[in-house]
Length: 364
Picture 1 (cartoon, one colour):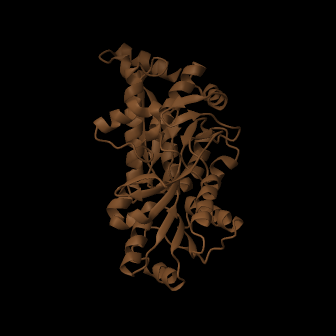
Picture 2: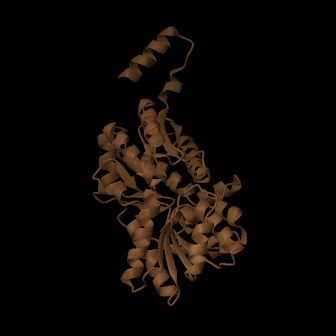
Picture 3: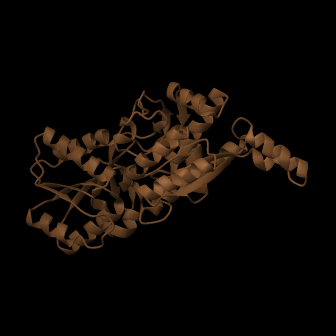
């Protein structure tokens, strides 16, 4: 009603078209600045392409989508501020945040404002709190931790393994799950350590690893710290294999770690770039000089989810969108999406990858 009244008032004043007021605001949020900004850049590029494609098809229910971008820098307090800003902008859908430590507090703001959200955050608590507005388009840390820990136990028998995390909600949660899976297969970690993210000197950790004879590090955290640890391990003469999680998909790891990046393995969903149904979109990104790695296609898929749910519901009202998302199956560039009562994917999957020569592919 407010929108209609505003449009009428503007037209009465003359000189402005009401077309600009027909935009439907949707949003992304994540680390657009700071040490994890490359992940935010992936999310932005994916969402921008999706929205351009949706708008070229006529938009959603006759309205063109307008993208709002929130920068939380992976800081929980900033994430809450971003969420409140997005509520004030009247968004009808959020894809975000990226860090679980940001997604968890921000989601409390969105649920109060009746805004549905898709997220790639993997900490189980994202969906375990019973919020009805969250739809996770990736698996959970208790799923990828099981895959990663089991792989370590099966593939590195007789090796000494350390489990390390960065104390974040995502990092500690993932590391705990990897350790649990390893121990379930009879492999007890030689060391269990934690670091502080954002530091530049991890020589203390490297010394501990070397003295303990550790050859494999199961790591819960982000790619920036792994790159530093690998370089410092190499300088100390320690040959270290790292097993991480989904955040290791970032090619910035290769730039920062150099050849040592070839020692990094990680878990991630099956590569959507290999999905034949996604081929036209993948080609379009590459033609635009964007490699759709990491979270690019997930952001694209999130906007497809919104488009298809709104079309099925014939509405962008929260109650209608939530019902459509919970009850439907949606065809996206990352595969079919369907959600359980918690908002988790019904058929998530994780596989193990390895970096090699500046690219990642399934581990052999």
